[in-house]
Image (cartoon, rainbow over all chains, first blue to last red; front, side, top):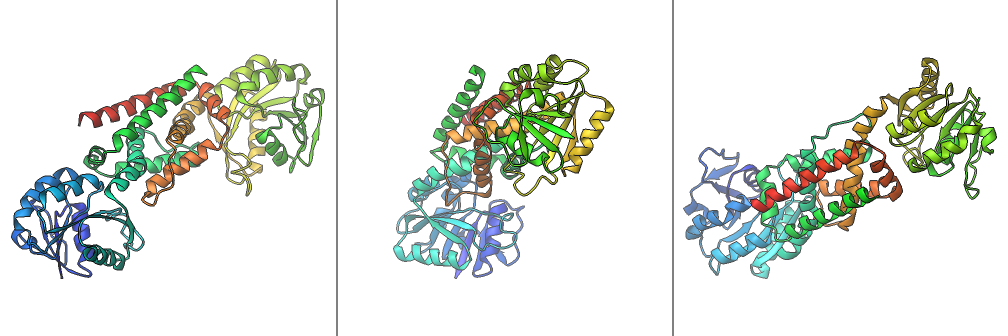
Length: 241
Length: 241
């Protein structure tokens, strides 16, 4: 079984490597400077489009353009699966641009080369139905489980709502605190250490990913409004006290 | 050597108990309903004022009134030490209300009954010179070290500046996030878990302590302005993107 990976950025390269332990993996990318990971064969879009399944591993903001390039080469039996950190937007784009009867699934692998350094066992992967038969859905669910992943099934809408109030809020707080230029302190409490950890864990990701996660998740605007409302209230209470 | 504790709230009661392992401890409180910890003798202010040293263990906002009640009973040789979580304000109040030649020191024991459940070894205590001889300062420094504490020496101003940008910011963030009513999630990341930890660790403290820490630290207003500026900038950047 040949699995295709489209995009060889940090996540695509990592994901292609991981899949190559169980599958024949081919990969394509627009960027000729990208290295091909060991055990993966570099191909053109024509060959990629004939794979059993193609994983889209491009930035959220690049998804639409990437799909437009790929779609002409897709065979009718190929399954298309995205790996974006939001789910409503990519599922909507795939359903719109990928013609029937090609099957489509959404995933959000909640890990990367850093968190999977010691293996993928128990790491969470969100699985979202988009336009696939029960058979296709269940087979991919089983394959993810066989890779050691913890599969969490939810709708694209449920994912984005929950993600806005978990990763979304965490990343906004991390970026906000980063601006304050906080430092280690001899009088830092345990809570303060956790604040420093949040900054480190969120600000190591590229700023573009932060922007994309906020922009392409329809619930983050509401989350940011709540955050702004809350901070305004707390600070007003303090000045009135 | 008899040590006095004024105030038998949560911290005062805990601190009196801890001191009783090495000293004769007497305690006074305005509140007749407070229990006297085992090993501690309840006294009136007249007797408390004659102790070798009196630790003030009252709320920051109650410090001035408490000192006004205590001062008439202080003997000239008694040393007065506060235990407030800010330092400039209580040092200023003590210097103003406690007459010379009575010696005065500031401390901020950065722990309480929760963090010291398994002992005080290695817990930090901030020590601030106010109006004490080098001999008095060094003796109390040694006594704190003998209790197993990690003594951190800094000026009241340095303490408050550093505390505003460590505990101060942590508590504001904790209170702000508490308002969002965040919950455990199947898709919570490690960073999100730390956010939940910050909420728990800050919001378990009484709201009055939060208000006092913000109000009586002269640097927290500037910290809150920076925080507001930063969140406004981040959110505006997102809406313009």
